[in-house]
Amino acid sequence: MEFFSLKFNTFGLDLSDFSAKIVKLEKKNGKYIFSFFGNFKIEKGLIAQGVIKDEENLVKNLEKGLKEIKANKINTKYVVLCLPEEKNLSQIIEMPDLPKEDLEKALLFEIENYVPFSVGEIYFDFIKLPSEKEKKCNVLISAYERKIVDSYFRVLKKINLEPIVFEPEILSLGRLIPASNDFVLIIDLGETKTNFGVFFKGLLRFSSSSPFSSSLLTETISKELGLPFEEAEKLKRTLGLEESILLKYETKESIFKKERGKIFDALVVCLSDLLDQIKRILSYFESLNPNFKIKKIFLSGGGALLKGLKEFIQLQTEIETEILNPLLVLPLFKEPKISFEEIVKYSCAIGLAKREFSL
Image (tube, rainbow, N blue to C red; front, side):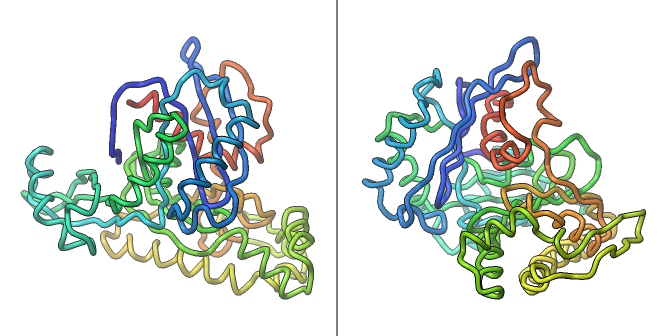
């Protein structure tokens, strides 16, 4: 789903409430090279829940951060930017099976029935999906308030960047899924939120966002165990669920090899909430069509690195679960000097950077 689309030499910018991540990819002999990657912090309060609150100081923060990571080495000013998933008004609707141009015109009249804004207050795009009904099609619409998109546009222009494509966060991650003929679910566990996306043959079929976050897990450990936030974060990263639960997965049988410990007990309520959301998505798709069964779950984002989480979700859902590895769809000319853990954190920016080669 794209809001602007032309052929340019671009880089990916993943801009969130507390951080900015940048990736520039190039191709040589049909293989990819990480020509640039870097990240820096965004000051608290400049962006909140995906909405820019202070354009002037965000510009200063970005200028300073870009200078610190020497982003001037990137040989282009054209950027592909992700828009906050929590502000994405996404929905699947049924429409007459029309050519794309006619469908777009029809949606101009229909879309106000599905979003809480007038058509003049939003930017929207759509993906046409097949339907089992004759002369009908399903349409996945994605809409954002103009004032949200325009604020990002103004900020980028003030730091001499030219935004070429705006797209929802989850769409950039879908670009990193290995080829498959099955329905797959991406769970992107970020610092302030979790995004969900269901894909089939590379096409987004569903997306949503939840306030469940990696920071919430740390705060819970801190509260339940009476530890400072920094110490709780350290425990989460070094021990995670493996301190409490080691699983061996054999077909549909999982064996507990160690009793649950304090960290698991501290997180069980949060994890139960996450599992409830996952199971609602699974049930929703099966209710649409018994054949719409999700066969694989991919975890992404920094929260995906919580030790034992992958095994825990696989145990509870009985669906094969793994951490999304962007390098599986990026044949490399040269290995980047970056760890797998960092690669996972850069996943969204990598997907945005890869967008250039799909334009």
